[in-house]
Image 1 (cartoon, rainbow over the protein chains, first blue to last red):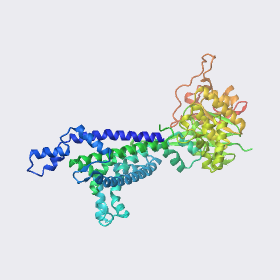
Image 2: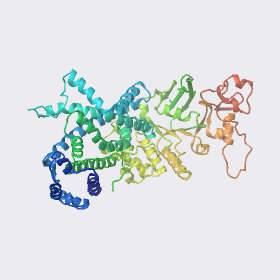
Image 3: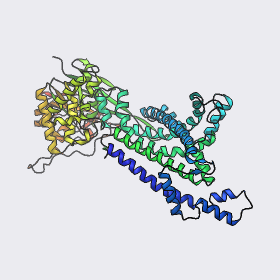
Image 4: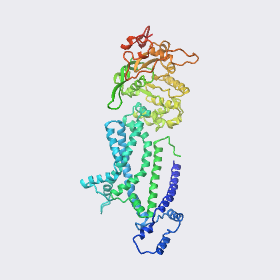
Amino acid sequence: MAGFILRRVLQTFLVLLVMSFVIYGLIGLMPGDPLDTMLASVPNVTPDVIAHLKQIYGLDQPLMGRYWHWLVAALHGDLGYSRTHSQPVLTVLAPALLQTCKLMLASFVVSVALSLALGVIAALRPGGAVDAGISLFAFAGLSVPVFWLALVMILLFAVRLHWLPASGMGDIGGGGLADQVRHLAMPVATLALATAGGFTRYVRAAMIETMRMDFVRTARAKGAGETRVLLRHALRNALIPVVTVMALSFGTLFSGALVTETMFAQYGMGKMIYDSILGNDYNLALAGLLFATLITLLSNLAADLAYAWLDPRIALR
Amino acid sequence: MTALLEVEALSVHFPHVSGVWPRRRRQTLRAVERVSLTMQEGETLALVGESGSGKSTFGSVVAGLRRPTAGSVRFRGRPLGGAAERAIQIVFQDPFSALDPRMPVSDLIAEPLVIRRAGTRTERRARAAALVEQVGLPADALNRYPHEFSGGQRQRIAIARALAPDPALIVADEPLSALDVSVQSQILNLLKSIQERRALGYLFISHDLGVVHHLADRVAVLYLGRLVEIAPASDLFARPSHPYTQALLEAVPRIGGGRRRGRVLKSEMPSPLDPPPGCVFHPRCPKAQAICRSEPPALAPAPGRPFQLAACHFKD
């Protein structure tokens, strides 16, 4: 087990290394560079000045050489300086990463809990009225656009009922836990509802499949009550395929988070990466994308560990 | 002395909906229709019949897994439920899917005891260990998972699991048919030796007449959910009374006997959704007369053999 984790962590670093080169290359291929953006507002520069600036920033060197310089610095913990924020990359990135992690983790937990409960209830009587209602909810969650859901929530809870703040990450002078929770409630609910729809469908399908298996009948023959049959035997076996889907979708939560963050004016990773790419802020974009990759890789590692816990047939070697 | 099991006019019907609106049809599938039989302590009663004859449905009602539509099942004179549930256990056909893949063998065997809060953890573990040894598995099997075992070994685990609450009756629903022939005889011998050690009754559901001949004290033949013949095994195999039983026995292939010109039954078993009127067997019966098409025959002793009951107007 320890060997497995160690090997996977090393693999993760290798993938990050490759990804950093790919992302660096892609950004380098983008039209324009930081100087173009910087100089667009200054009409009276001469070509000499531009050449001089390019030399200072190292933009006259070939791509491979620039990547190598970045890599060496990055390995020493220096991710560079964000041009658009005029601050070190890590200073900009850390709060955004924290904010996104809060949003993603909270909405992931809520959507997993919601979909497990709904999926199991729907699978109790497939085709029944309760199942139909839950399926309707699931399809609504799958098909309603996140931005629309966010607007409806703002309209309802902030404009009409005045229960929750419409946007932002905290009141001025606030910042306590209650204040943060109030600001996170709607973004989390929006993202959770959007993801819970698909999860519910998967849980329901896996449960219906498992409930038909013979060992469920065996459990009943042992005299197990319905709760024990459902939770001890059926659900734990049904979870194996579901965990794959949930772990893989953790990465796509990022893109959902972008829209949600924009709608609720939360400064998170999605907004930060988007702004940095548009603003030709190479260093920030690169670091942001790499952390997004890292989160996806870690969620997959977590999924593999979850498999081993769920299914004794899977030995981690 | 009260009988171990008394089944009285047991019927199991399923609602059957087919087609799509507006051609939707609601019908009733009569899986088991008014079957009565009794079993004594320590007896092996074999339940035989084709696929779809209602054998397994009958077994699942006896094991308490399904409620009957009508009729009653009494265990040692008392209705099913409570103590009877512990005393009647079931072994299923497919040992590959009947064991929860997520549980080690010790938990699989001890779970019936956990559910009933019987004994302490150590006592349950000791009981699981004793049972594992009884069914002929190595002691280290306890900590392993079902996927690490072969089909025959898994069926041994399933049997140990059924024995855990110390039952008086085991419903064995085709326990051999998913196994290789060589393994079948091992499991068959295991079932016999367990019965010799405990006063254990078997309701043995099978379509393999060779196995039934080897194991059963009495045999009950089901056709389309109806009991058509019930008799001591030796009588039934020597002189089958009902034409359906005769056809079943003649269909058993024998080594060395050459190809016998047995009566091979015409066509398939009719649908239990739409059973024929009168005697349900008449469309396939070589002896069918006019009365068979209108009058369902009652179960009655064959001439001169009071323990051999058959439901036929023209029984031998």
